[in-house]
Image 1 (tube, rainbow, N blue to C red):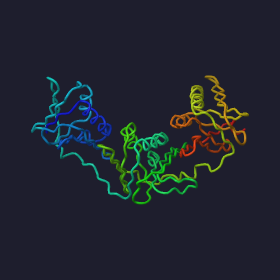
Image 2: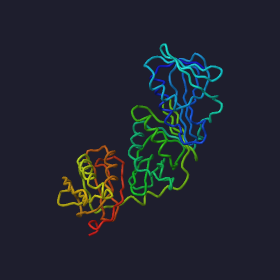
Image 3: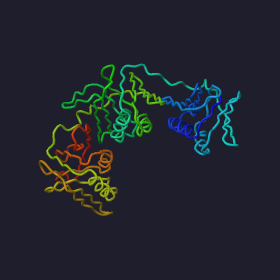
Image 4: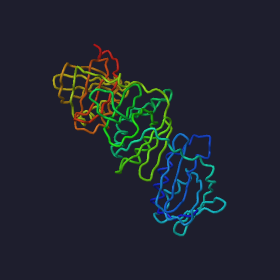
Length: 379
């Protein structure tokens, strides 16, 4: 195999694929990247047996062929190469020679035949979605997944395709994430769905990696779903992953259907106030108390060893006066991803979940956060 490629193309391909490589596996072969040169491109693949990725990069193919190259070693090298044309040459003994300007170095490669091939998903349902839109959907939900693998289904994001059964929801694509303390749901109506309805749990890691690939570009993501796998095709990138098997919680039962108090407040003001209050609350389990007084919203935190804070914000308040305590970190996470100028906080008492939504028509986003029981909140 022999190819000529720019440093920019090589770095982009290697770094995209290298993120998939597992560092914990007992199977050494998947610590490599598969290089395949054919026609007018170089294909770089990674496979950690749970998820895989292949990316095609433009290159001048002087001799077709394939080889496995250790991912960690190669990634450390290509990032430090000079900004010039790079030549990759593999000899009969599998030695990979990397030449640039008047210099060269060599890495020991392995036969490509030993590498596990990426699965091709048997289609049950497929759809196309605008890349920036899908990246936004992922961003607004992924932070709410659980990091605790004891409940594996909560480490993924529920992907629902098809008509919603919720009243007033005309979407046909939904992403839902929860860790048991909060829940984020983003809904959209898209064109190009084939195959009916489907509900699957996608590992958060694969959606995180996909988001990095698609977030800053235009185009369409082609998604194919089967009973056990899901694939994403975007431009020259193909990703495939196993699905998480199990029963996702019935999130519809968690979402409040009505509220006693509706508070509309500027998103940036509330975020800034919550972050300041979090400094005081960090030594007392991140607990803040929210109270309405007239047309003001108060964020109160009191830590005897540190100090206290009472942030007062102008707000439009409808309904009953309210008092409730939340983990301020869970509130901050949502405020960081809501892109509207104002949000609406809906409350129904000190022991009921709070609902945060954008104060904009058609936003199709809701965030539910569980309250914390405190003496002040239930007094």
